Image (cartoon, rainbow, N blue to C red; front, side):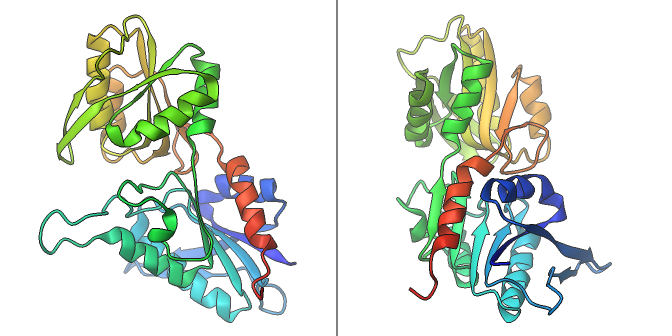
Length: 304
């Protein structure tokens, strides 16, 4: 066996879809939690107690803290057992939003977590990471193989089937380029709101000037939904401006705490997401998007 994809049981679905898309065998990492919350992990070694020289580890980093410890333990032990070239596939990459210190003493986690992962893995593939203050993923993950893909085109294709005449709306200026690329896939009309954030759950939204949403089906498109407050405020404004319907499409369905209930209560009809984070709203598989980048990594000669 020249390469193997490793996954954890709670992410079996998307991991096996990726393995199938790449033509790779896959095996599950054994995981046990002790009463004191420590973890015991077991790698799926062969009869000789070894692993292949090339590994792909699938671990999306929502609810990241335990998962980062898992990755530390797995990568260190995998190298002892024969793995020489290890790729992390983390469709959602945590701690990227903490990218600037607003007050003295605040820790900028983006670069710290990025460097931590780069010491464990020879490559990283992720989707729509929060890179609004840097231009490339390798500025956060300083490794030789750092691939940031976008789920926007796949979401646009889904929206074209579900809402053929929809208008796409971005919740803030940071989404402008992302919204434009999604709109270009199927020729959607689109606009971008203006957002001012006053706290984790306190945001102020204004609709773009000159964009008419009266009697339109509008889809709010964003890279992630966490508290849901931005989407709720945008939905209220769109409804007040006469939108016939408001739906939501996001790459990363984080939906912390009561977010989903708040979004539903605001009158949002449909919620679609990719399978970067396992959620009932998952409607788009990222496996076809990521497969080429995985196969390219595996084709690299680590000795070259």
